[in-house]
Length: 234
Ligand code: TMP
Image (cartoon, rainbow, N blue to C red; front, top):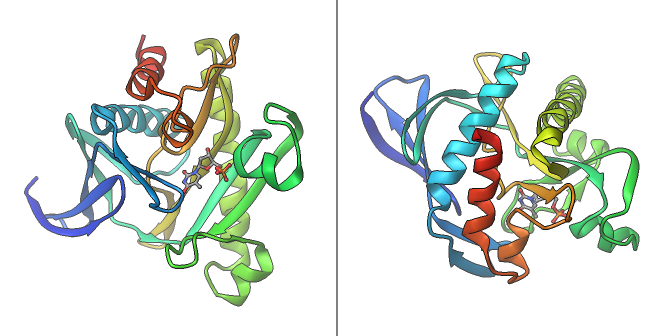
């Protein structure tokens, strides 16, 4: 597969065309940002680890019947994916109060939620990804009601699959963010699933093994990503 024109460069990934019009190549970078790009840094080894971790999760989800954009990992930091017309909604699923939910609702971080909470955010750097509801999504015509229902259902199924998979690996899935897109009339799960986009806590110690180590200057960022990979692969 020939790596073609650079189509888009985001904060953590670059997307290239390939010689197949149905396939993009994703390159994972070591760059990290937080707070809508206000905080910048690099996490050495992150690109390779997030590529591996995402490939691993996409493979698992495909096995369990979730349609994703993932095709194959082609190098240390590159994977091939199906082309997507991205739906500009970030779907967040939460099992335990943390981050912005803990802040907004005045809950102590670590408070278990009685059932998963699903939230939507409008993907817009200019606006700082504001939280939106189903009426906003209809008003902005971001997705049809049927599409939104499918997104929510799939996100909750992904939550169940990942929690069940991670529990014996001593990882608590606190919360995570998914993105979806349209490909030849079908909705596919896109983007990445990694410690950049999920909160993982050690089940026993509560140690944070995700990007919060970077956001909150906790140190040991690369080690945490590596630990997640070891628990998945080992
Ligand atoms: P939050 O608590 O900051 O709203 O984050 C919820 C989840 O979404 C958490 O697992 C991290 C993930 N996330 C992203 O993937 N990208 C983002 O830009 C933000 C703010 C959060």
